[in-house]
Amino acid sequence: MEVSIVEEKKNKLVFEIKGEGHTLSNALRKELFNDEHVKIAAYAVEHPLIEVPRFILETDGADTRKTLSAAAKRIAKDAEKVKSEAKELK
Image (cartoon, rainbow, N blue to C red; front, side, top):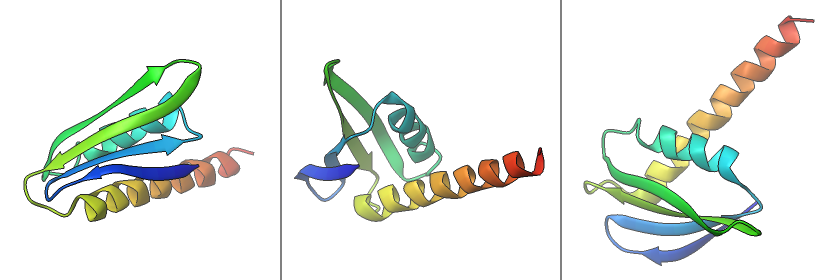
């Protein structure tokens, strides 16, 4: 997975996630909306054969990179919790 910044302004970040599809993109979009500072969190895949999600993240003034990083950490924490609970099922 490779994250590329396409555009960065004070309250707006446009980035692409190469090597990922709708699964991570939907999870990230939903998790970003859990942040009270997020005004817009959306993504689009321009072509289905070249699956590179392009995100737009806008905040009310909060640092967009820190907001994105915090959302990614929350997703990772949730994934670890699911992994741990799945091991207990054995």
